[in-house]
Length: 290
Ligand code: NCD
Image 1 (cartoon, helix red, strand yellow):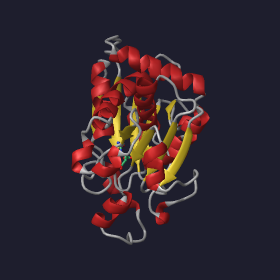
Image 2 (cartoon, rainbow, N blue to C red):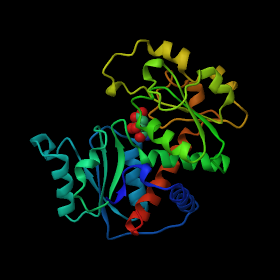
Image 3 (cartoon, rainbow, N blue to C red):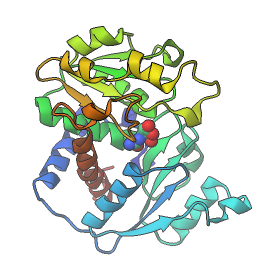
């Protein structure tokens, strides 16, 4: 299948190449595809991923076909496959899809146009990981040997699962932390206060209430105190260490309001980098390389 569905399909050299291409685009390099049309199909809520894909498409001179899942024939029982097949038949050159089902793209094997995965259930979020990696590369100029701890609702997080796999491949030391009920043992566990003092990167996650089967066994205030990035914890981080978060952020839960935009936070830089990473991925695919 064409496009970008999971980072597991990309070799380490290709990942670095995409980051370098995104950096070149960030420095002002422009390329344009005025005859192309790409549809965005978001079956789950999204602010950043959806609109940063749209801004990326606009920056590449590509026309955006904005699919409204509420007004579509999905409500009449049309399947995901038939919906995507329709866009292909309409002559659209690619689709961006976010869906709550893990690996929804396995149903789309007969689709020939590129598919750009904007997140599938708890499994993959390839462009989010690439923008995270770009932000880390800009900061440290390398991956090998860097220590990162991902904190929070690991078991329901496609961001955690995607990042852990790719970060380990790139030679980073990756740990997880947070409540035991969210620990799915996909990386070694570190108590938060130990992680705070030792890591180069602390990546916080939102609690994914919409994916929970069971109710969380603590209040948001208790979560903040035990597992949140408080101002006091931030002060204990290494001098050059940074704080990341894919957002949406819940101020006062996983991150204190005063920390969200502090000098260690790269949260808004991650969003900016997301536009360039998505431009790089789409452009590389339209050029026949992905
Ligand atoms: C994340 C997602 O949707 O997976 N956000 C994002 O894409 N920037 C994380 C989240 O929803 O908490």
